[in-house]
Length: 356
Image 1 (spheres, rainbow, N blue to C red):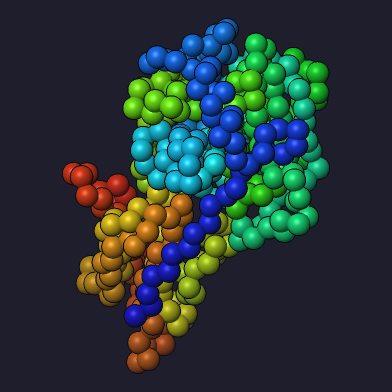
Image 2 (cartoon, rainbow, N blue to C red):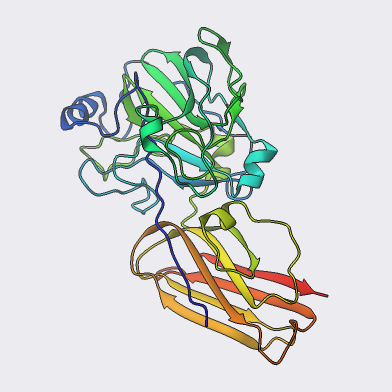
């Protein structure tokens, strides 16, 4: 039996010079604590509310939030829902598309509020589907192709990892909420196609989902998104990114940019795979492969041993030596991700492959 194989690939999306560095100092948190107060934000002037979506896609359907802002000022990483959809020092929100195919189709990155373009970076290439990047070549330009917008009164927003050649604005240009800034890409230090969206007040990162005093983490903060789009920004604990069938063990390149080629019935192996985000330690993962008659060809049930940003699971069977080709019919791959405390599975999917 072909077994499963996970991988950990978390993007370090820090902002480049002249923006703040990867981790905020303890002094910065003290300053931020002085700026915030009570159950909400005590801004000197109101923020650029309400914020529009920074992407022209449907969160939870055609795009997903891979990482939220890290609310823990120490070495741990906790998102605003006390979940694991973040990593240590992450200062923004990562809106990702599922695959390279979606990136190539073009997903617009949009200004979330009115302002003036303060800085632009363009000309950096997009990374490969494997997610392996040359960090030395990137240097301090971690956010890749980027746009920084000044909203006034100390408020800024930044949009990073834009597609090479897609930046559509110039420094000094006035933009309105909803104006196109570029396209989702994978430039800079990025391991999957997405836009790193960051809101800052006086240079300090603010979470638009829960802008709160970090010294009082149990006190709810404000939500900075437009009320009408908040239902589309429902927190997704986990989700499928891609899935399919293959004659070979899937790697990061295959799942990020799956091919449309038909399955050859004479292949020596039939493998069902799924690529998903949001696995947490203790989750139960069930994967199975069924033949055209509904009989189980292979099945595996495991518990996740650690939190993972993204995971590949796969399961398959070799073609029986007595057969020169896989029998014709529709094969089914199934995957279920369950978590303690949830009545329904976080992921339940079924995928079919028809062999003529």
